[in-house]
Amino acid sequence: MPHPNTDHSCAVRALTAADLDAVVTIDAALEGRSRRDYVERRLAAARREPALHAQFAVDEGGELAAYLLARVLHGEFGRSRPSLRIELVGVRPERRGRGYASALLRALQDWGRRHGADEIHTLAAWTDAGLLPWLHRRGFALAPHHVIESAVDEGRWRPERDGPVSLPPGFGAPAEIDYGRTESNDHERLARDEADVRAMTADDLDAIVRIDRDIVGSDRRDYIAARLAEALHDAAIRISLVARRGGAIVGYLMARADFGDYGRTEPVAVLDTIGVDPAWTQRGVGHALLSQLFANLGALRVERAETVVAQRSLGLLGFLYATGFAPSQRLMFVIPV
Image (cartoon, rainbow, N blue to C red; front, side):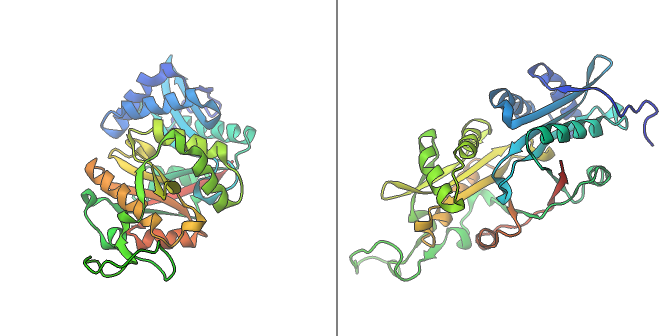
């Protein structure tokens, strides 16, 4: 039953840096451990790029009672229109049932309408008996996306991802035959050897924008610049990569490893986007990027990698499934703004 003091018109305000301690305290009470670094990074990101974040709070009795942190999406999940992703939401346990979470969701929907967004997304485990009924009552539905994941397994060698890449006839650079070499032929090489894969830097922006434009057919410099900044500065662990052939960037992978997203308490690598220059497809560049990513994650003791792919992105889904990804136990939900 609703609390007798439920106030569906409770005042919602913007979350500020001064709320950090209160948010951390409430979150720790809900999750059983402190995620201060994660919360601090999300508040700092909102101060740095306010147009890309919507963060709200509800006060009661002179103290923070509930909060919601969300961010703007522009190109994720195969979409071309802006949407919103809920990153963190919490209500003091002793003040649940008073309509605060619903008031925060309404504030987020109002904010989204004013800023041109048309959907709100979030993720939840299908076993979350507390959150799923709340999402259902608020009008959320299953989103047309696949949440897929892969165990990092300490970066151990996996043939489908790290093994020799068989290149189609005509692909790959020609080379003199060396009869003293032990490899089977010139078209089979370990995935990681197909490109020079290294950590992404801010100087890679122009090349990444060019590849993205060639793939999607439009210039998304602002979106790519924002994702690059997040990959380099917002995550606890920087794991974004670029692949080079002949000195030129021919592919990229943007990922982040962090505590906190969607209530997670273990470090998970989230693969935001992966792109290969159309002139270099079918040459093992994507395999090289994933192979190096998992090698790095294994060294960092990250246990799992996760991503979200639109149902219609059959080529990307096929590639990821072929390299070891599988359906996650988490589901994506969506509600119109």
